[in-house]
Length: 215
Image (tube, rainbow, N blue to C red; front, top):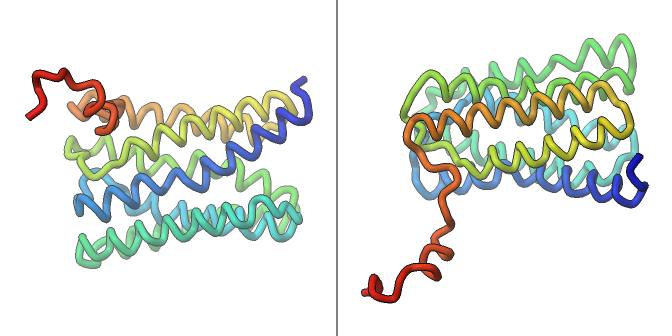
């Protein structure tokens, strides 16, 4: 059993990673203007699931979830708008379909109340990631995919998995496990198609470049 302080730290770090994981993808789209391999359905599901987390945080008075969920919704909305502009509106039906898939927790909320909805939202995390992974296996043109988003997803899910193992929460165990496996598959796909998801940042490359190569 992990100490309470460590468990709290795990929750904080996992929530921060969850809110920020969309940032690398948003930045990549805005800078590179390349949508190759980015799933519109994933964006729609992600908006819906983070709205669920926002509502759940408000209803359950889990105030730490509220600002993080708001940040996540805004980032995924930026991705949705950018994708729509770059693909000239062709992605709107797919984004809408993803948002519809995100309604899955509704029956759980109606039948079992807030606690059941919370479990459904946790399990739905794997569902949120699945469209992006599926899209990566349908093409080799993955230049629009931001590896940082998926590296952060693995880290976040690993923390939720550790927390789930500690408190023996089935929803967190399922969500954490799927959240590790699915992004790992996408990162593996990037490697297999010749992309470099783990390359060194540019500032490290400049610092470590041999002196004779400068200029």
